[in-house]
Image (cartoon, rainbow, N blue to C red):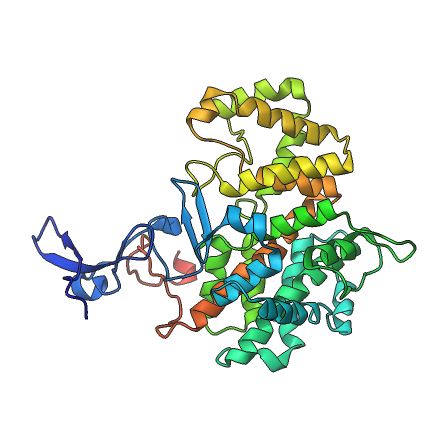
Length: 433
């Protein structure tokens, strides 16, 4: 037992003078939290925090963000360190298990993921039910949820081994499903995964190879995709991760929970942000119009917003953007891309970074700005961008879901509300209204 006295926070009712002491819990890093779980029982009051901007919904050991300092860490390792030295699959192991793997553990994990990349052949029939112009995210939500109908042997969420198998299946199969979704939209045949290729390399091969000719994935593109996967692997309790946890708290199967996360990610304010960057660039049109649109962005009365700059959490800089910026320029150089939209993006970046208005407000390019440019250069249409985000974020979702299921105090998520509707009234017959 610690000799340190319990830290508390005293809350006083100004009208009655009554006070209540609430325990303060501290993590290993970051702000402490005021534990309000017994607040209603003690005071008859709920807390109100729309959009959960000041509420900690859980305890987690997975990801730490310091938005003021521009810090992102997975299990204590900085995102810069991981992208420089690790790989997407090794980061997946780290997020799932809490520690970096030994050589033998990594070989076993790599083998398990590689040999789960195939999907049940009957899943191919699902795609025929969609229109060719269906949004890829609509297909992803449906097909991922349907995995529960095929893999009955790993649905017992209380069995650690079954949880592990489901985690491996999701990490392995979602890239395959994403590639199938892309191929379907292009009217091209599905390409089966290859066990001799790396994780990111295999995904690009499934997306861009054709049966009629040999396709070799560029190491530069594979490295860029691997980095994108690492950078998007997890990001604390964001909208989609919170959705996965809420769905999982009802004891839903992991495939349903990840499908729920994909649905949440679909929103343009979350996973669709990099698509919005490209749409903004198309609206700007030419380099000559950049100053005009920067002025519009400065005008609070103008609805135009500079997409891909600034971040809800990061108030200094987005550390992921710093890492991805180099990959962005490497990819453009490798491909020799002559795309006016991409040239426009580079010019916008240059001008905005020298404008005191954006510099003073720390509105620097974020990860969505650069990832959209990279994916466009690789040849992905904008409607696939959020799908690629889902491929990367699956690792974080399943890690967060696993951590939640293993929490002894697990209870179904049940937020409360401040009711502002009508008070009690009597029913009036329809002929008297």
